[in-house]
Length: 279
Ligand SMILES: O=c1ccn([C@@H]2O[C@H](COP(=O)(O)O)[C@@H](O)[C@H]2O)c(=O)[nH]1
Image (cartoon, rainbow, N blue to C red):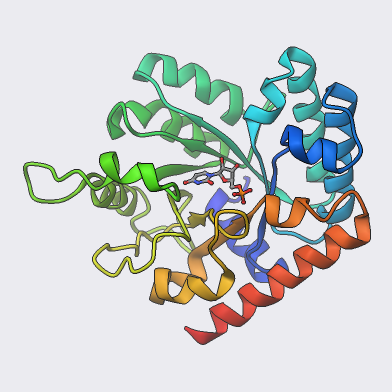
């Protein structure tokens, strides 16, 4: 039987360190890399990132939007990227942020979390803003497939607060409510539950939140959005060991040279390791 996503992620983070590198082929990055903003450029970009890092980072987080903008040929590149990244031993967190009414959510789940799907991923980012319960089909299929989810709880962007900080009738805010749902989902799981939260590294002091959900915390915002690895202890405190810090543009801007991509990822990995050691 396959180990759960939480088990595989814990192992990968312990063996390779927790850095998650985003595969975000922005049009501007393709240009900076001397590539055309077309499917051939997309393919070369993704192949280079995978070649540089698949044997050393714990997790890749492909951003589906940058592939989908090229239609079916872009999605074919995404499928190939996932396949090649796996061969190097990296786990895949597909950043597609799906969310819909339950019956449609079931179809999104089939696309990313059914084991024989071409886009099968170790985990998928999902939006709970049609109600946490609407995610049930994805949670059920993830459990069946040994996959995981990352639920948007406290996102890294400044606009997220108007939704996530909204206070409910019970006095708890929306972000905290998502964290509580996830803690319930992961109860009793060892060494780590498979149902994680997205919590931005940009958010400063989060001590008023209970981040101890016994699951992973995907932390975007390092690099281009202004947060640094040194910020992590202040944001995550005692749960820092369960944090999967994501860097996309901060690493990718060093391409297309494979050695420079590796050096950049190594620098972030070292800084993250030093930050984790402080807690
Ligand atoms: O709250 C969130 C959730 C997801 N993201 C995604 O992470 C990367 C960040 O890219 P950088 O280049 O390192 O800024 C990107 O794919 C976002 O869609 C996020 O930033 N914040």
